[in-house]
Image 1 (cartoon, helix red, strand yellow):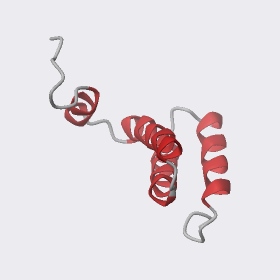
Image 2 (cartoon, one colour):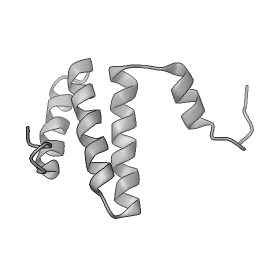
Image 3 (spheres, one colour):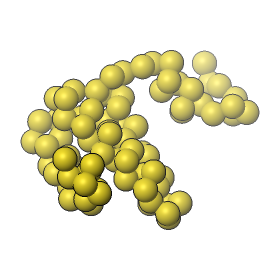
Length: 83
């Protein structure tokens, strides 16, 4: 509700506390990922946007692991693979 009302800063704090309270919960990680992604989209600063993107991706990997997406993200096009 906070994020939909535009209070992304508080929503991020609460999502972060929820994940710290229950780090194995896929539900709290899914919420954290969505909140941080919303904050990333709303952010004007490139550096802050990257930080929010990282937090969203971290939780997304726990909430709904997708090995193909993770390997593509960690190995951008043009970078040699080490397999």
